[in-house]
Length: 147
Image 1 (cartoon, rainbow, N blue to C red):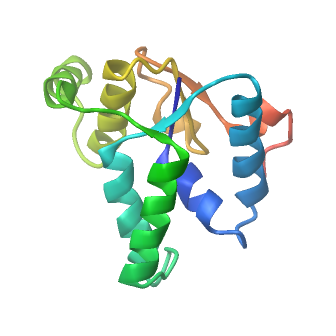
Image 2: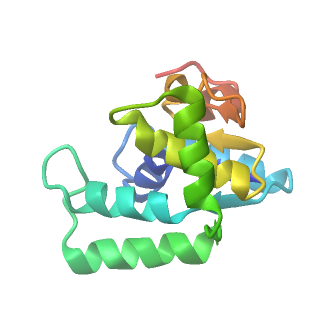
């Protein structure tokens, strides 16, 4: 299984993004290999924030954002997160994480507790210090030069 980072979900939704095609092709390639792609509640929280932000976001209305979230939840498997909080706390202690990276660490915890081996993200540098999962950038997966 591969957890999709929120930036992948945003690019899939934003067909005008220069990274839309890479995100879509990377997800399609994973599916063609039989890989299950998954999301978690943290993705949905982050996506809603990005989707409804007028600047540096997608600028969607509330109903449009809800529809987009429902599409994501239909398209990808949703991880169950009951043990997630404890796993997240253990990782914060292990890596002595503070600041905004705590959100990425929750995705690592979701992936690890959900049985994911990797995370697909355009922000691969944000996840390289965590040994619990491997990090895959869509451009690397597709053999493309990074944009």
